[in-house]
Image: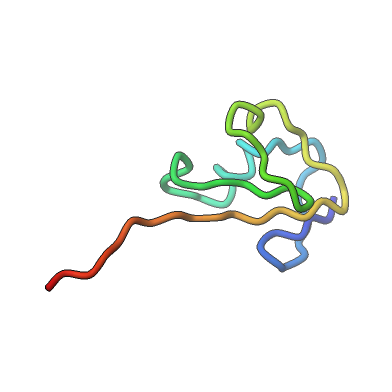
Length: 70
């Protein structure tokens, strides 16, 4: 199936879940990633059970803490 991941269209195995996509994409800290699926934020408990479909658009949103040291 074709998915658009972070703005780039690629082929993926049919029936892939969001959790499996994170593993396949070698996301080292999945607990620090939010997922936007077709313009909607997906709640973390849904990662395991949400199967992706042909044409889905997924964005990985990485959050990092930071600040300025004086």
